[in-house]
Length: 404
Ligand code: SF4
Ligand code: SF4
Image (cartoon, rainbow, N blue to C red; front, side, top):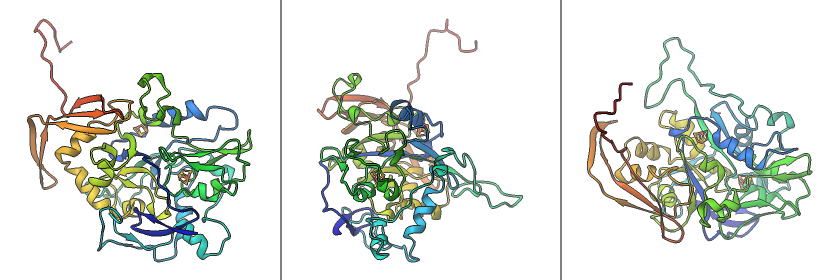
């Protein structure tokens, strides 16, 4: 093992390979607050990549109901148990914007837990049995309740609650799957950080299935090798004629009905909307950072769920993120207005200020809404999208009626 820096954990950690970050990292922000669990994203992926023989149980993109749901069943609880050493604690007293924005995690990652237990493998894990891949919508809309007759739900934390979590491969910076493969058949692309299984080299060892904590590599009985989410790389490369050579968001992102998803790249540009939401505004957080893989799908946590549950899921940045989302700043509202306005990947945004349209006090804070125009630019700096925060109103000639 060597030591690499993981900024989610705010510390160095053990990993089989040296730190080597891509030029820019495939990443996305999912606003859980807006998800309706329609599974359109799920079918967008299914109908493109996993519709064929031997893939019947494969759902690279899935949306599960928390806290009870999961695909494969109970994947999170099972993996969390493997790294639980009784002292999995976050220390948040000292933070560093770049190196440890959420504080420091002192528990064991999947790699460290394996080394400590002398397991003679790169990470702890388990291979879900075939029956665990059944029921991809297991636990749909099943709430946690306090089971008292007078129970009712209200903010800040609902007593009876559930929320949806949208999952695909996280194209991790330190992938467990890549570390696990003894044939080095899994690789991470330098240009965009996408993690792929080489279908020619793979021998179906299933080490990736075992050691990906998110359970995203899946074994295909027909070909006898494993497959996983490919981040729709031909679209990312601009191969779809629709965007005329420009990088295009993946199928699952583009399909999102609830406008919860924005995909792009994590880079050093503070005016990149994805980078701004994750690194600068810190409103979007990684899923189970304690696994230690530095996942690259980031979530705006649901404002109604118990904070303790959210903290174990997204780390200690939860309270600040929920606070910011509940009464959004002018910039946050404008950036969120960009979600799902185009299929072309936005690399930079600009806000043109408009008039104030509304103000109130909400959750004890002043909230002002401005009808700003937000503009997105492509990789080449050309404008690719433009929208306003507020809907326009059109008044037609009185000969047209509304009451019909
Ligand atoms: S989510 Fe799993 S399959 Fe995807 S890169 Fe991370 S470890 Fe590999
Ligand atoms: S398409 Fe969007 S709103 Fe529908 S389930 Fe997927 S992430 Fe949620």
